[in-house]
Image 1 (cartoon, rainbow over the protein chains, first blue to last red):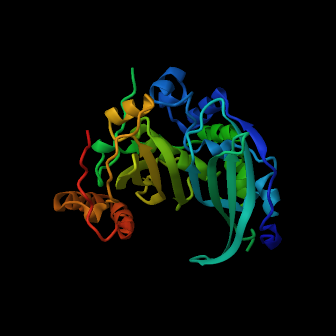
Image 2 (spheres, rainbow over the protein chains, first blue to last red):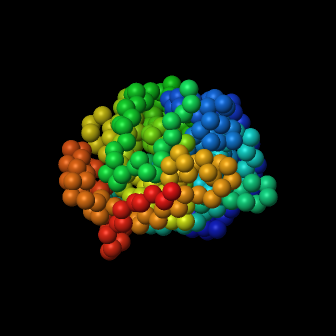
Image 3 (cartoon, chains in turn red, yellow):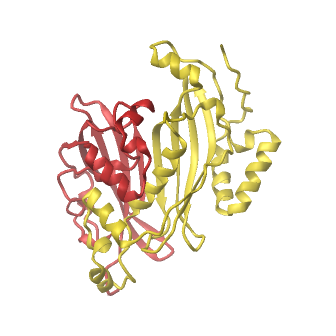
Length: 148
Length: 210
């Protein structure tokens, strides 16, 4: 059961440094070998200031607090339902991004398998001057209790 | 090798992205992805634990599938600036699943020298089921000339292009899009969903200003 008081809970901005090695390992794990994620010269020739982070790289940013802690649910019970990322500009190696998250919504929905709970988190990343770099919205389904 | 670029003038509503066939997801890939994002939830990496939850095996992180769609788009959109990627996780992803990622241009528009291409994107699993679906927006230069001008600090090439959509296209394009939709079954649904966004007035043909 989701904690309804979780709505509005937020994390303080946490610094994430975008490193080339982290970009490479992320891209390799996805099986994405586009040189724009590995080769600085190629990335520059493509119009980016440095090696480009993959589109979903913000999934690797940390906010200092575990998501399940933020929502007050056990570790096993969350399933991703939707994710949306809006980018103000490309994210590249060398970026220093302050990331914060907040619980935007806790809802009950009726699906084919009965009642489900949905938690929606909003996350944003800003540079050190406070300029917005990206915004993400993530929804999670809370799995019903085991043994039911 | 210098990268080729994607320009607005070469994109048409209904254009299909080259499908991206991913190798089967395996537990090593799941472990590597978990490590890359720093999420070691046991449902992704601990088989014995997953079985205590009556799951057949560990389940792949949904973000991995979204990563595949990101790859599909970035490969196609050479040099474009990604503005939005939005994905709905329809099916759980399991070790052994081979996903084929697909996409189609759903809209394109330009105003005041800013050019946007919108895509429908989706992935089908080995059973042919829709596993993920979503949409994407990219900002591109109008043409090589536009890019050169802007990179030299000059104003952009300005061509105002009203929102287009599959239904606003000439009949041939419409028919092509419909055929493509029928082929995949799911694509058609996506196309139909994109349609209501279309403005009432017909799209103006793009005229290039020199």
